[in-house]
Each structure stands twice: as C-alpha cells, then as structure tokens.
Length: 145
Image (cartoon, rainbow, N blue to C red; front, top):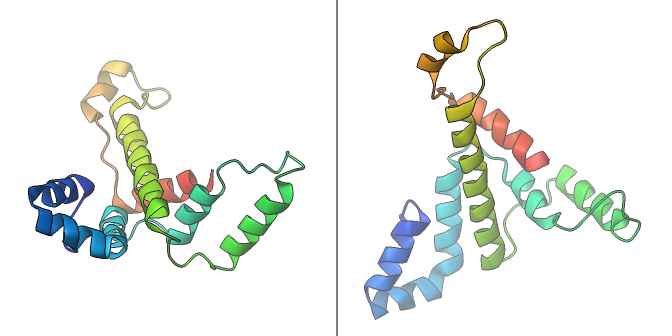
C-alpha cells in the first residue's frame, strides 16, 4: 500500500478486502504521507504547505489571532514544519494540493491571450503547456497566499 500513487487507488485497495483495510489502519500515517510525497513530486516545499493548512482562520488584521499568525510564520521561517502532525493534517494537505492542481489546470485551459495578439491566433496555444519549474513557482505562490 505504501507504493500507491494516489487517493483513488488507496480507496480501491482499502475497499478490496478486510485484510487490506486492517493493513491501512495499522499504517495509515505512513501510507498517506507517501501518497502526499507522490502528489508533490518534488515541486512543493512541505513547510509552505503545512503553514498554509495551519494558518486557516488566522489573520494579521485580527487582534485575537495576530500573535498566533506571527508565531506560525516564524515557525515556518525556521523550517520547524518537517512533517504533518497527524493523518487529518495529511488529508488536508492532499485536498489543498488537489485544489492547487484544479486551479492551475483551469488556468491552462482558459488563460487569456497575450496583449497585442488577436484571439484567433492565441487559441491554438490552448491549453498552455506548463513546465516543471513553472509549476514549482505556481505552487510556491499558491501555498504562500
């Protein structure tokens, strides 16, 4: 199970038999963490993603959460987020990454034409091809929003 590429494969495997369900329950943190690393493919800085998940509900403009937001940013800056806390956080990280991928795929299909280029000349370039380095930059910006 540790070599499964994605969540849908994991779901199918877990539902296949009671034995596979027990195996999943016994090692779900490791299994989900491996799937997370497969999803990221070396393109995402884990501490950025963890900070994005843990920052939910925090705001620098809210006096009640400002101190917690500063502490979170300071922890991220010091690379204290080495791995997810628990299974729930891994699942949140997987969902957030699926959202990032949905967003980038939508951009690739619908990006407007370059300034000064007629629309009819632009449409053959859609969907836009995104290199690994461009994805890495996109993910970095997405997780730091």
